[in-house]
Image 1 (cartoon, rainbow, N blue to C red):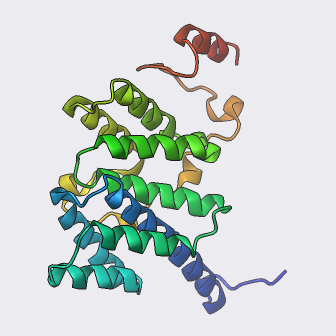
Image 2: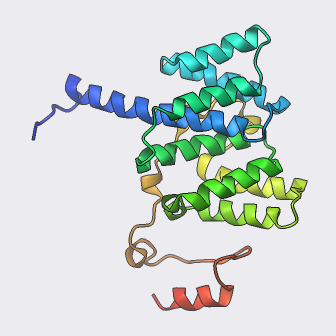
Image 3: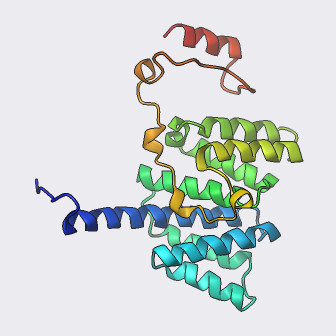
Length: 229
């Protein structure tokens, strides 16, 4: 096995390649999140442009540059965002867990960037989590799913339900553009730091509080199982 010098050129190139891959997946997910409602919402334009400008500044990316140019030429619409996301997906390994995680993180940021969750967005969040078992091992993702399931029961997303989903997403991706006025692409979470590996050691000495609604099993059953560890 090759030994790389700390802060050396070879190791730096490896880190850059991995970071570029992470940000590519994250920005692709962000575009998917922007497009998730089925139309370009008024509150999404500013965060979209902020992300694109930051992405161009930090990582050379033709799609981000094209989106900025389309906006300046008054040509930006939902199809531009959707088509760009679909094209970028061809370059992402669907079997790579890290790529899927960063894409999901970007998707959540795209969905929540305007501080409003639509019915279509909630349905897509639910589908993404349910279709990828690895996501549910990440701390906070289960709560996002539960809030979406609760909101979707009557087929209407109220303002309170929208806020609850936004807050659940904020727990894992941080404040949205509406709160900070800043692009978030380069503040990606390291999910490995918040992923539960062995419940016997990871939760040792911790206080566990069960709140909210539970769709997997009754609260009493969960309490019994936790008490058994």
